[in-house]
Image (cartoon, rainbow, N blue to C red; front, side):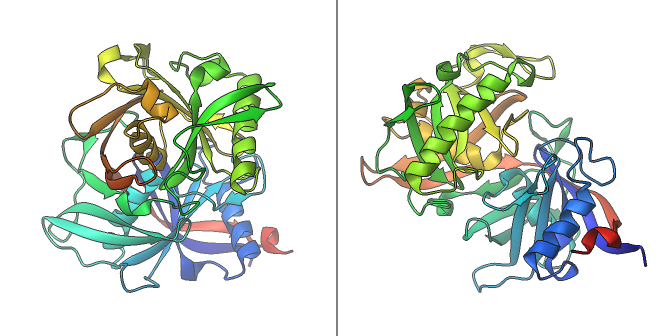
Length: 376
């Protein structure tokens, strides 16, 4: 047999799209499993022409889902960021956008019994070793698709799926503030200067730094990003990773450039007014590093928490609001996050870090992998 059929579902979650597979449909050996995944996506290849990848960091993603391994979860899942240009699948971060689709998928695949009007799905994420909760709207025994929830970066509207990351503090480092401080100065030899940074670990560890370090206003889009910008952001990430004892060539801490609110044009040609966002954020991630066209949802949780902790780089540029909402301005529009932080320096507590996404099943069936690619 020259091709191996593998059950799969393609789903959109928030501003991301990915291939959903089951643990028991993949090889147990991690190296062989990754070869299967790379073959399914057609990686490495800039166009991923011989696979199901979308040749974009936001669509070259895989979710592996299975029965729960612990009593406080309804389903287990592992997220993989599939490199487009390298034969690598990274598992050191979680995807908050596709996590919304995990809740929908779990109900549709029978892992969780549907309960109207809202089904709570407890999802154990193997990347961060944390349990997240998704609230999925249900009607007639199946997740709803239609609704009034609108997400910048996704056409139309859909049913609102709510995720809360309050219990995911320290997902990467076991600490909300991994350095022990709200703000640090890090010398970056490649830039020959000290860079002010704040590292906040909620859902995924992120390192925040002023956009002006890259010569940016915070309104930039992908076309305005140069190789020098990417090298500078990567240098900052590497220096911070080394300080935290993390692999310097990994995906965390996720580098995020922040700036005060300002008016700008989205990638869709719409205008975000200065008063429509509380701070501007530009996330650089993936392998190789690239500017996200939207904004990673896990990073959104960390960013909103950072914006509410006095002394952080994100807090310094953020507009102050009386309610619990923090609105992030990203290349495709805005991303509101509901956040509540209490406590004091040295004892901050995250009581809420939630946001809304939409998710939809796009395709189900079998994908085919050439068996010749699986031979060592």
